[in-house]
Length: 382
Ligand code: BGC
Image 1 (spheres, rainbow, N blue to C red):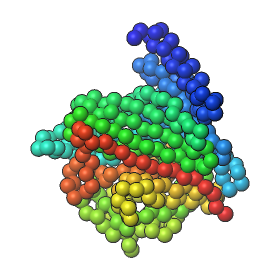
Image 2 (image 1 turned 120 degrees about the vertical axis):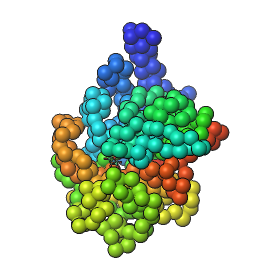
Image 3 (image 1 turned 45 degrees about the vertical axis):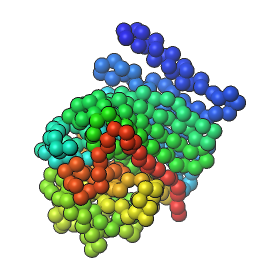
Image 4 (image 1 turned 90 degrees about the vertical axis):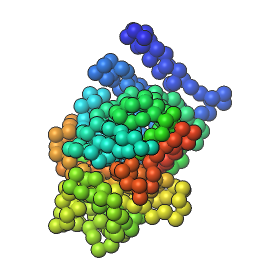
């Protein structure tokens, strides 16, 4: 398509999306506008999902990224609780994965190599000796196609991406869908993932939002109180690759079975904390029902009263305390994101699973469907 034709097509698509009512005219619809263009000149759309309880989620087609998420505090004051950028360029240049959809493989693959069906596959090393978050151009740096699937009870945005066979070294053409659903009657943002492949491959999708429940990203997250429904975590080596062990959290700074301020033990003299420069580990979630959606984590910010509960179908969660933020990333409104001013809680299969047969499998075969769901549930407390 020529550039003028592509622009015309884009505007027609924009018109169709922004005027899609159902027969009764009762259907909710989300707002769509232009977020900017990529360096290659591809138009990036910005979608705004709102509800009747004061929440607003903004998602862009670049990286199927959650750009902002506004929720009320205990006094009803609404603020944005995730880090991000104001421009496409920010996301293209950025190295922190703010709010992005991570794939084909979330977190690390040791030495950029794994064996599948007896064949060795090489994926790009972009984090010391390892491959991180899908390689050099992961799903967070691709342009996705969005469709408004809103219903009477929720605003719904479905984004699709087709990852080609061999992209970033991974076998199989992978069709991926990510759906963001903001409930009309509660401050719940649900993220559903779906994927199919035409060759055996590995898949591990997640969202990489950094939360700061104060709504003020100049403050650290060290006073946030965290609960993780996990009795074990997967310790790592110095390059943050799991050793394969599942270690009890009891008696360690990794025990978040009871609400604990993140800053309480983060600087303790502990080898695992040193490797991560703080928390940057995978916790093994306690599952009572193997396949169901279960409460994995709760975060409470005493200053604002905001509470975030995370439910997931995944077996693990990566708690990353923003240890690599150093103030160089200039985010929304020109805010520099300093050390530990955001925390990520990435629901996932365990890092480097393709090289650890004892971990839950991340393999996907033709005819199978990958499904994963994570819910971000917001409320407030005294
Ligand atoms: C990883 C961190 C990494 C960060 C990238 C997290 O999921 O575990 O080690 O630095 O993503 O921003």
